[in-house]
Amino acid sequence: MTAFTDTEPGAVFTFTGTEDFFETLYGTPVTATGELCEGLLALGHLADRAVLAVTNAYHRRIYGHRILPSRELEDLVHFGTQRAWILTTRCDEDHDYAWEFKESAANAEQAQAVTLIDVEWLAHEDNAVQSECPACNKPSRSTREAAGPGRYGWGTYHRCRHCDHQWPAAPAYPLRLERGRSWPTTRDGACFACHCLPDLPCTDGCTIGPDPVIGQPLCTKCRAQHSPEVWQQLAAVAYGTATRADSRDEQRDRWLYSEALRGTPPVQAAQAWVQRVTRTAQRAAVRAAATTA
Image 1 (cartoon, rainbow, N blue to C red):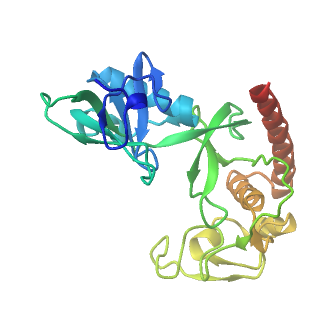
Image 2 (cartoon, helix red, strand yellow; image 1 turned 180 degrees about the horizontal axis):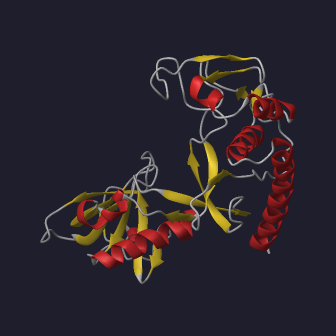
């Protein structure tokens, strides 16, 4: 049988598992399929336990992701896994990919046994700089994108595995000489502190209107989450004052708002945020140095 490295464009070949695009996990060669890693292709017909093992290991090693328990993960071996036979063809230079495959009969010439794993909808947390939970002080080393209180849009959040508290991650940025692109703080007519829109209210009867204290539009629900005194304290520490969105400003707003929900005075929360940003930058620098050493 002809291997990938020896075949010509348009010819059928057989995977050996030693190609550069394969990663060997628990003795099984695995590679991603699709434009955004919608699936994994593993050589051979894997047992259910091996499917879960290589899926978790691939995301952890290649992407720095931790797969989270979810309905999709529970259904992976029953509905998201297919044991098939395939024929692989080497593509020419005009093609977007180096190779492609199609399913075949088991007795077809050069047919190869593979396990196709659908991982497109699996929930995951990214590998991140360690941060301590503000509620119980336990460390977290992973984040995920989520819509949280305090600022319109999605942000990066830590989730404590001990007390289940979520808090905005302090960004860590390498030094850049170029100027970053800026965006408006919210969509027109949206609540500054949540995903609420005039035609998509977060609760029945919720309305959005300008708030004179922070100078931003707020919906009825968000305005009611803090007392007038707390809103004044939030405004005093610059909550909601950024006119162009920067993820550091976004995360700071989310942090101040979230900490106020826990009863932390905004002045104290603002000081803690500065400390977290500094600590995160130091930890990121140490990790970067260890990676390049």
